[in-house]
Length: 126
Image 1: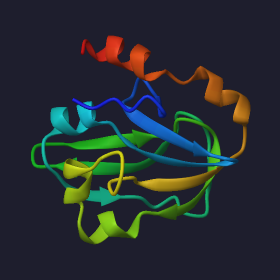
Image 2: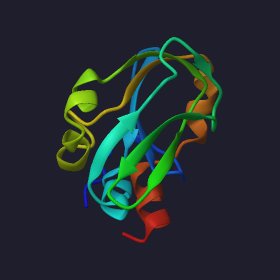
Image 3: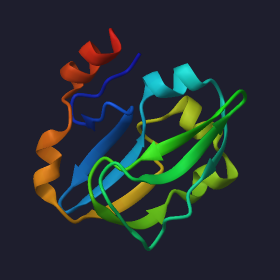
């Protein structure tokens, strides 16, 4: 399993890549493997301010549907259009082409509450 050190993680298995006052968010490699093949991603919060830990969308795998939780408060600027037409990129490249949303971070202090790669690895027993 892959745990890029430059990313931040949540206990709900989302990752965050911070770029200035914006961030990209997706699900971790661990989450993708636990869910199985992702077949559909539903994000209806583009343009909305979403509070930390609120649901910003769902992912549908072959056997289940799971909520996606916002790691930090922010305005959803865009959804990765590639995963709308080709959700398999979440399965094959969850930290790259499989990102889900880009946000404008509203409360940068919340970033300090996220997990490092090592802390996330310990959480999932890797």
